[in-house]
Length: 236
Image (cartoon, rainbow, N blue to C red):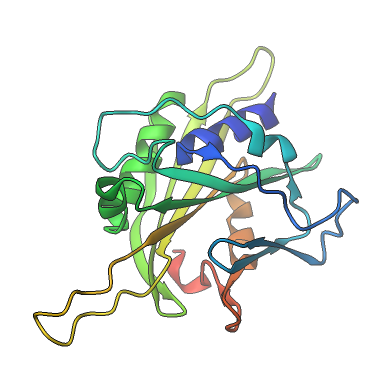
């Protein structure tokens, strides 16, 4: 039941449909001490994550979430997509993450997503509200990933207690970054290089002390040096 809730929360957090794109690992039991990777062929970006996380093949076959029309910055199934979902479930803890991409299929959605901080805050609060009254534990903090502007928001929400179970709190983090570094035009007559993609990383856990796992995620643009997805300095 806990895993089902965590998986559902992550899918609704990104409000996107899934792609039929499989991870690049086998189904063998992962070594929690070794990193694993997922390569987004469309954008030529490689994500690295802790070996304790197991890719969920079913996540790429889920029915698209119903689009919300409450805000022009809402990433609807037609405008964005999830690319990868994995979870870690042990007797001691539970954590999950989702990678998603917002492109220019819907210019208004992409434009809203490029604001990063306001967009991330709106997304994480709206989705957590379906489980209770969420609290933002860290407002949007901006940083860069290999020169790409990025921001992260942390929040939490008490989960409804199941019969005979101890109430639990879900801790969530959402980070988004620009898929390309916009280049300003040197002349007013020249068009600026627009942002073509906004990439997001949604992470949830049932234990606040598992926020430290965020520091074990990294990514590699093209063939550049891998960079931390969430540097330790941005989490307070």
